[in-house]
Image 1 (cartoon, rainbow, N blue to C red):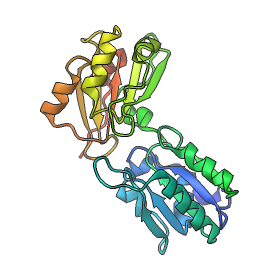
Image 2 (image 1 turned 90 degrees about the vertical axis):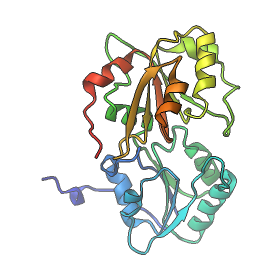
Image 3 (image 1 turned 180 degrees about the vertical axis):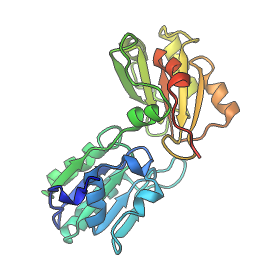
Image 4 (image 1 turned 60 degrees about the vertical axis):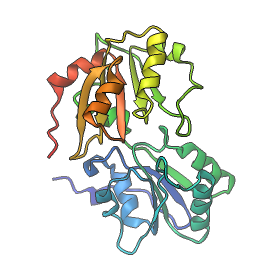
Length: 260
């Protein structure tokens, strides 16, 4: 058995901030560096999508601060979160900014890193497994597959909670055989209509993976044209990742994860 304590891991210095990806949910998908940070942090500022089992791994005595954004409810403003990270670091704390998925993939980690850099607060970025990779893997859907697709487009499915009207949907529709939508469940009907108007086939396979990698994971296999109605009928809940394209057909064959 490998003893990870034998690894030479970087010091988590007082007065610094680590921007860490917690992955899509399953605590087993944490990186060694993420676990290292949890064991040493003085303050953990975490997002809404971080699994409680991951938070339970934090060092005893570490201060936990909820900075999660939740649709339709009062949530911390991004500038306030960045200011809080800076304040904690300047107070001499080891600050762990814990984000679901990967902090640099639709996680606003870049904004927080820029704020830290401007304030001259030392920081480290620890990547995590993003839902568009890990969530699909747990659904048995490869992000890429030889002979099917060699390109993927990752798209955020909302603009600050509103329908994503600023996207060039014609370019997105023709940009890659496989599209992955983050935070797109609420607006999947509008998005599908735009993609179909731009030339995507309404009969194209699609899948919605809800609460990926957790015991509550559900996978709805559907089509682009019927995704919205099918999701409503099945009462699919967020957080969810949507994948559109021919790789969806592999899901029923390769699906290996049996949530309990």
